[in-house]
Image 1: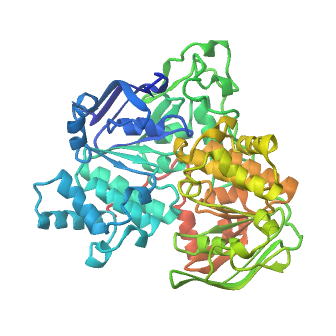
Image 2: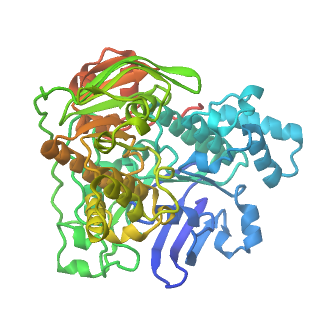
Image 3: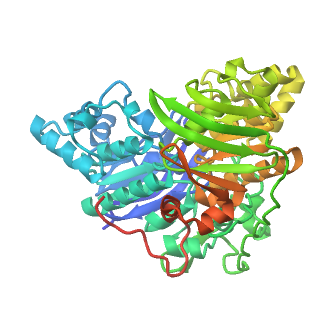
Length: 597
């Protein structure tokens, strides 16, 4: 018997009745991990939240059933539902910094979880459960670690604390909403192994919501593909990714970078329809190259193999997909460097984190900085942009030395050197609309006002695949991926010569990522834009970067052309990063090992 059974789920806007999710049905067995993938706005998080009997502000669950071990959560009274959450179904969020109270120590937060939901456990029993839970996720349970505050933990440690917190109550079901977004590949691999081992050991059914297809390909058992609030394809992970049936799934797979080869990433044309604007029949038809007149009718769920089905009226007529075209590696640029860093030493919180780093960046070039969390990548990037005051060495832009602080730099330099932050949740002012945030730089650097400024804002939004209407929205009205696109639009609106990108694609779905990467490549070709690209995604490095620099404990341990580093590196650290990079399944691929962390 399945542990989770969802039947005919419908979530809609409370005032208008406009559907956000409609006619969604699936099941999850104990110990099984079910992936849920799709673009931003496809309804993934809405479906995941419904497993907790929850709908976001302004929405309501209007129909269907969500049964967990026979109990229909949607039929429970609010107080009983609140009591069941945590013990029956748990939630692991995308951003651990938002889930952990910054004012409470780790011990207090874990202990309060048990005290509220398992009041019969005594103090010593709670301490034993906490120690066991931390050990399961590979964290120490000594007094020193438990006395830390969340800000004293790395991103990977914070995420593992939230995982431990979710499993402390031994839930029957756990919903994971993008839990590895922003983590380096080694930490990500550790977290994924932890999740899979805990689900197996405790017989927990898991719904894993993600935009990263390669992650769920190596972690999950089955996968659902969501589009416009509906499930358009479902099947076993290996079969679905190796032989995608629905045209939408095929385009998602084609937009995914591959660590093995430099592919040209192809974004899906057009935009996913907004709630209330779903077309009749197949919702993907307006963007589908294979659409015909029959697609105006609602497509049935058609089986392609045992356990594998898709909603497409042309399922058995479609030609085999063509492999994505490979990129042609350009000749190295011989122009003088626009940015040069020499002997950079930097400290953070009184601790030396960079040791004698040198780099050069030329117009048209993309230099990728890779390494684990704590390797010094972000400190290096922020030192260059002028947000780290405690550094020594020399940073030159266009042949002239730069002052340490961004406040001391000329306006022209501030415009030409732009920075995009990793977290889309912290980089936009929550009290300003998206349009106002983008317009600030336009007004400051170009003097544009009124209609001219509004047109520049609309152009910037269009470049990152956001509709002009988003200019009037506030950050909390956007998804994480949409916020990141708005942050990118804000930087590009300043027409920079050097763009420093700190993990800017980690929150983006693969189609939008492909569109952003193509846009950056176009700006590099046409305007000479230089990119310093901080990332943990080595598959993306293969596609976007000309050269790679690998940092470990604040030192450069490997550097060279992209092909030279990714294909022929002799550094053990680089080879470990490559081994931890997830990829889509191929015939004969070994599954992710299940073992206790």
